[in-house]
Image (cartoon, rainbow, N blue to C red):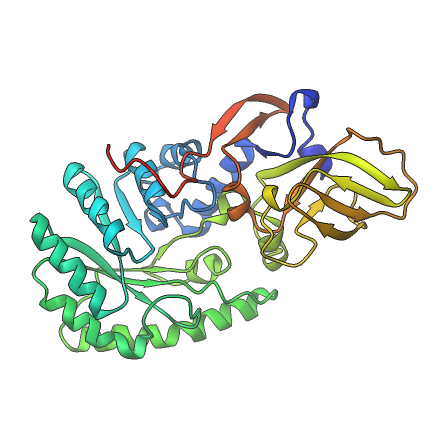
Length: 369
């Protein structure tokens, strides 16, 4: 695998660093479209990469609608002139105000967000009325993730309330089931379908009462394939753009390639079997137990510890590693890893050709423009 990522002019690269491979990103975009059966079913999430360079590649392939999780990501999508934006993170008041301001300023873009409770619905409606606009809302459903959303069994009341609000346009149902992660594909499909049963019941209730559901958006990356088998639903994978080791282990049959890797250098050999790299907490997602990366060529090493700037490994095999040697590492979780960097080295055919800025990594942003 190492030969897929080696850079010829590696002495010019600063570590720790993030590499992206445009040809591999393009491969992943093509694979997403093929699995979805076309671009119209795709509303990819931008939270993984946060880069206009990736968004523009998707738009060139015909994808024009996107999900995001932050105002910085929303602003990035506005800058890229996409057709539709779903802020898939129920906003509080201070976030909704600039969101509505952008909706007014950029009427050519379709803006929407999520709601999962009556209090937020009233806030959204009141602010929309104050600004003289209608707000487009998706009902965020909790079908087992237990992170956000209203359980389908209680969502009918929320739907009725939305239908009664003159300032609200109901967009449909939003279902994220990132908790479904069996390694066996058929088991994952079965669990995904079982978790969707309560959503199907809600759909029947709404339609039986004379209502309609404009659209349904389902899944993320782990359940991308199971929901691709479902008819008439939008799909919103995100990690599929760059891929990582965590999802690669969950979905072994996937067509996706690792399109982003970390570079790190050996900075110390405190004793014969201990290797220390400049790949600490500040350089890679660290919410999971060790190991948090797989260093290519050191797959059998034991990851012993990590601090702010250091990663310590025990490696029992004979080697001639020297301080300063460059290594490549695949993170288990790419999304929060990307957010640690301001920009990534773009690598094409083994050559560093420029940088891809990670424009939407900040939370405190200029709300103008």
